[in-house]
Structure formats: structure tokens, C-alpha cells
Image (cartoon, rainbow, N blue to C red; front, side, top):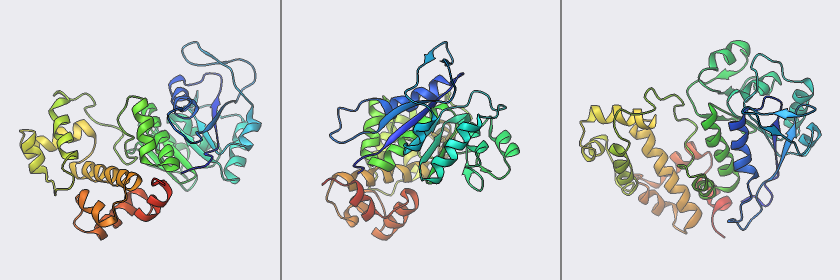
Length: 319
């Protein structure tokens, strides 16, 4: 766990995108008295001189100017005010300097156009709101634009899709710093579901299903309680009182994922929680999470989480 997660600098500018800005302030700037360890330090950084007006008629007062980016460990770029407007050169230069010294940069929605203008995404995979992905790819051909995902983590640079996906990307960064348990605690305080995986589809053809959500919620909860079993689509469909074909369609409409992908994510969430909060060994965790062998568990964990289970426990496990 981080001893000092460092300073998070959230950019503010005239014409500020209020919702994206609020996401960053809520997650990184809100006091966390429920935690007995150091949380992020936070400041609002002015991009423009003079009064800055946010969408909706709000006026924003900053804590500091661009010089503070020299000290920030993490910089958040909310949605940019105008994709056709070249961001100020002073801002681009400050972002380049921060990147060179190792700062992390996270863009929400159209904020990716600022990082792209700074040249910080050349040769990298990136994403943005599905409405803007073609434009991003056309204007910046050196970027490998993925139009489907919620967010893309390149290690030092994270880009996210539409506004709500910015919540997932920010929670993902919290998870990187503090582990899944703490990220889920933050999500609960936001009164939202745990952070979604970055590879989940950002555009679901039927975001408001034609059937009540409860049709699948009970089945998903049942599946979470039986992750130690080799669950099949036919089993889940039978629980939902649907044919396999109807269940697959309804599942995709409701979650944007396949049942296999959802189960893999649910198993990884359980595995991370067990590694953080228990002394169970890998064999026991693999069994509880429904893996056929400890080796298949290690391979899946490393593929989806990015590190070995032993490393994850060493970093995030209870002392």
C-alpha cells in the first residue's frame, strides 16, 4: 500500500466540463476519514488566467497555476472545452515535462485531445467517447485508437471513454495504488457498483433493457455465491428461466460483456479480495474461485491483473 500516494492535480479552465471535473474532485479530493492511512493530496490547477466559468454557470477558483504540475504525481485532464481548439502551449509543455519526470496522466472523455496535442499518446493505445474515436484516429494517426473499451491503461498514461467511464478509470488508479478492497470502499461511498474492467464495452446497444434489471440481478448474485463451481451458460440461463440464446442476448444487453468475461472478472475480484484479507494459500484461493488448478489461476491472474498473486498479496495484503 502507498505510504504517500502523492499530489493529484486536476486541471480547470474556462468552459470547464463540470461533470468530469467533479468526478476527479470527488474521488481524489474528498477527505477519507474512514481510512487510517494517507490519502491523496489534491489541488485544482488553473489553465487560464482570470475567472474560469464551468458549464452550468459555475465559477471555479483554482489553488495553483501550471507550475504546480512540476510537483504532481498524478494529473487529471477533464473533458476539453473544444476539440477543435489547440490547447495553450504552456499547458502542453507543462504536461510534457511532467511526463518526462514520471508523472501519471489520466484523461476523461475529450480530455484525450489535450494529451494527443502534447504528443504523449503517439505509439500508444488510447480511447475516448465513442462519438469522438474516429476524429481522434483521423487527426492523430500515430495513436492506436480503441473505440470499444471503457478505459486504456498504458502504465503512465490512462485514457477513458465517456464521462461515466472516467469514474471507472479513476477507481482503477485507486486500485493500482491501494488495492481492490479500498477501490471498492470508494465505490460504495459513491453509491455505485465496483469499478468495471477497462476492457468492458463502452457502447451497449440497449443501455436501458426492455426487461427489468431484476431479471438478471438475482442470477448474477447467485453466480457470485457459486464462483467455486464450474458455471455454464446453460446453468445461468436455467436460473433466469430463459433459453440459452435469449439469456446470452439479455446478458450482453445488460452488462456489455459475455457470461464468460463477466465470470472471469467476478472470479478475479474475489481472488483479489481473498489475497488482501485472508491468509489462504494460492491453492485454496484457486479452489474458492472456481479454477481447475492453481496453475490456471496464476496464469489468469497475471493476465488480467498484470502481476503474480504473490506480488499482489505482498503489496496489498493485510499486515
